[in-house]
Length: 209
Image (cartoon, rainbow, N blue to C red; front, side, top):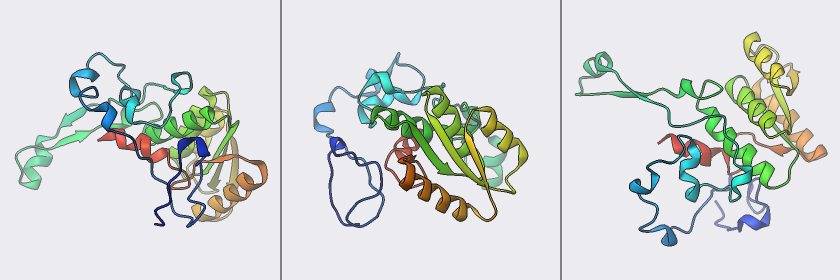
């Protein structure tokens, strides 16, 4: 990575202009010391936005939520026994609104896209990310463009369509779908929320921990 740094007012919604590598969000933590504590989280909404101080969407009016995050930890004693350890907990991300952890990343990326004044998001997918992008774009009243391999399971295709996205079927692999989205983003100015093509999805995913 090149080490270049950009302020959030500099519109860093793609990869680094100098090296093409993913951008990573960093925060000024000193002002939060003594304020952003476990006790401060008590009583906050049970979504990923309870951690708003260390998330990239500044304006609360643009923070989309469909109830993602705050998923349960399930005790798995038989798995613990099989692994030879005292205890194993499994985090059930299937209880997120669109059925996977992808809801966290797309909630963040679409929220940030809306805050930046974008009117469309786009990504390639072979499943859950496409559904999540479509759902959060619909919640934001934004367009979503999703490209998928033609052999993607039909229930996934039906869900993406039902959520109002523009669905494009591609003869080929997910990489071919990604190339189509990159082309469209360049031509039409879509906010490309493909994996590691912007810094915001990973910020939503980090709340899983």
